[in-house]
Image 1 (tube, rainbow, N blue to C red):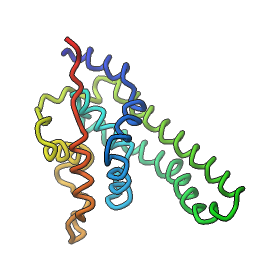
Image 2 (cartoon, rainbow, N blue to C red; image 1 turned 30 degrees about the vertical axis):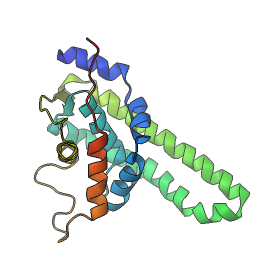
Image 3 (cartoon, rainbow, N blue to C red; image 1 turned 135 degrees about the horizontal axis):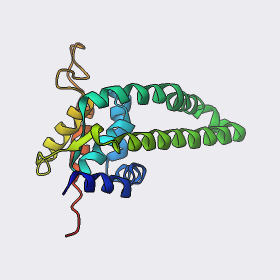
Image 4 (cartoon, rainbow, N blue to C red; image 1 turned 180 degrees about the vertical axis):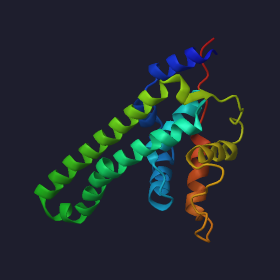
Length: 190
């Protein structure tokens, strides 16, 4: 498939729609939340890479590093603030209908912030220099797909647990395996 055809496929299968579908696959939501909370993984970026994998593409490292700064800032200043507020209100929402309604509103705002972030990631992918075809065949073994996903999020010289003196928890390792097991490549109709 030509590169321009692959970019067209990205437009026709929005990242947001892919994220909604992928997130509902068995174990994916729990795995994403585990990686977010325990390994400080940006779930929006994780979903971006899963979507690119699905389309046989990968991000160009240099371009990714630049865009990541913008997306991390969005996550910290917008989404993260909303998430923290929602979590802080959890207990109080059980005792007060008004707080429960406020918490639900914040949860909707958090979801809208996530959607906006994913839409911005998608726009970024449509610039041809930002992604490229990934010819590697990694679809056979879930562990190889999980490893591929980790390499997209963390450069080969950086591991999220390096310098901490400890290995990733079994929960984190299992979360990667779950995601690897749910990743698949899009096979276009012939």
